[in-house]
Amino acid sequence: MPKKRIASFDVDQTLLDHATYRIPDSALKALDELRDDCYIVLSTGRDMDNYYSKQYRDAVQPDAVIHLNGTKITVGDELIYEHEMDKTLLKNIFEYADQAGYGLGVTIGDEDYYLHPEAVKEMDLARWGRCERRFKDPWVLLEKGVRTLAYVGREEGAMDMEKHFPELKFLMFAGRMGADVVEREASKAQGLLRLCQYYGLSAQDAVAFGDSMNDFEILQTAGLGIAMGNAMDELKQVADYVTAPVGEDGIWKACEHFHFFR
Picture (cartoon, rainbow, N blue to C red):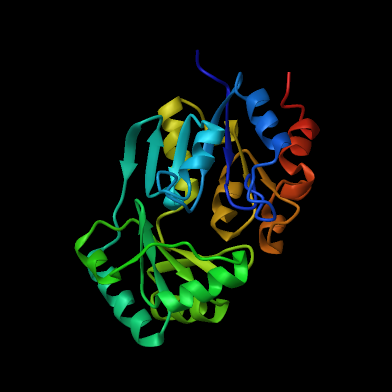
């Protein structure tokens, strides 16, 4: 039976609390309450089919996933859209990042392909206290299909690369210790519009939750954009509503505020 709304959720620091590396029970309960009327969508910079993300995908059991900032979309097990980064652009930014010493790459499947893995490891230890990545030769990416990249490092590096590569967006993580790297035309918002078309709904029928800069466009595009209390200030400024932080039942409280539950 068709549903009347899309409910889209970012993963990191929106559903997934980095303080505990768990999805709060209140958030999972909210998702279950929403399922009768809403298509549950994960919209994330992650590839939710990767080894470190599948457990959260399986916990949520979404109807659809906007992976990698809109460059891969799945409905159940069906791939309905994908886009790969221009190979010449990929080669040029790899050469620049390698010379500059930047940690740039991507995780594909169970393996991590990053330039300067030592820089990535340093930032992982600073953010999470551990680094469990499975580093492989990043230069093989030039022969693979790459949808998006990730930069792991300080904000100055992202700003430097964006200055040199205006074809790309560097969407800072909430902690400003890295960024999603995507082509200008790619976004979660475009992924949401594709799912709206798939489900026969309009963007006004969607609610989107997020916390960082890769959520900026989707919060503006959805009929209702909700920023977490721990969100970046720039995101809060464009949101229709700011809820409590992820660790303070923000998802549940927003759903209650808007009377989403029957």
